[in-house]
Image 1 (cartoon, rainbow, N blue to C red):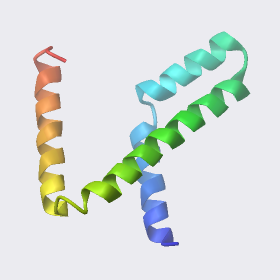
Image 2 (image 1 turned 60 degrees about the vertical axis):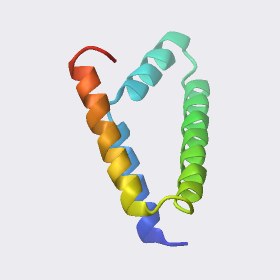
Image 3 (image 1 turned 90 degrees about the vertical axis):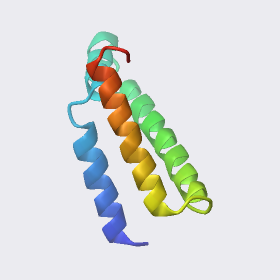
Image 4 (image 1 turned 45 degrees about the vertical axis):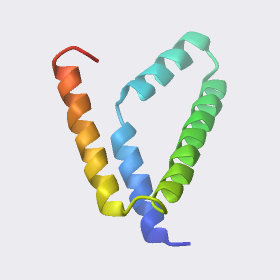
Length: 90
């Protein structure tokens, strides 16, 4: 296993998810339900599944599309989504 990539993935996801709407929703659900362990297990399972889908898709798509194009497409998508959010269309 390449621990450098594992640490990089951990740090990236940890910082990106810290304080986002998923974390706030999890806090609210845990407070409302009174079952923090159940909320934790559900949330961690969902994050693991979404991450697995992303990793599998990422490994597959790089066999078809060269990595620099994927970076350019992802960057363009972020710009478009940001523009749509700023204009209230998303």
